Image (cartoon, rainbow, N blue to C red):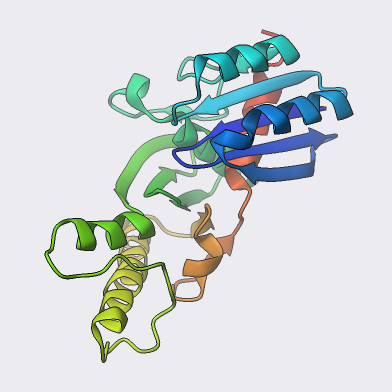
Length: 242
């Protein structure tokens, strides 16, 4: 079994793979990490763990991972199933590296745009030649709600909610419409930009807010909630003997 661990900004996600199948997946907060990872180590015979981190896991928890598993920490210098043409490959987030690996493996010889809707919304493009060209980074849903509250005097901080109408008839409804419809139209617009330049484009929507946003996006997309974990697994297989 191979364990992949994605350390995000707010949540830690894990995936346990056996014979190329995602057998177990879970998400938990930083405070629950020690208990959860010890439980996994006790229950399963894990051959390798691959750690991907864009968050801030404590040194003690990192030491715990290495004490429990044979573990590798994903970096830009790993063997990858695509050619990285990013201008500064050493600054490319490991989460985006994993998404590009998933795009290349699961949609070979196709132009693929992966949209990861999490704390940030990232757009990552791999062309039909398995070349990673880059993409875009934008604020996620919660960041946009929080910005409206932080940078104004009177707007409340709201939890995400599907807008009742694109015409908000109250302050709360106007915020929901502005945030959710704004993101959905942003996603549709960016997909249209890529479609203009790259024919036969496949679009994958993933991340914690993927299912929520899929209800609003008008473009044809594949919704794959665990795509990042799957991409990490593909990379782990390429680097298991190094």
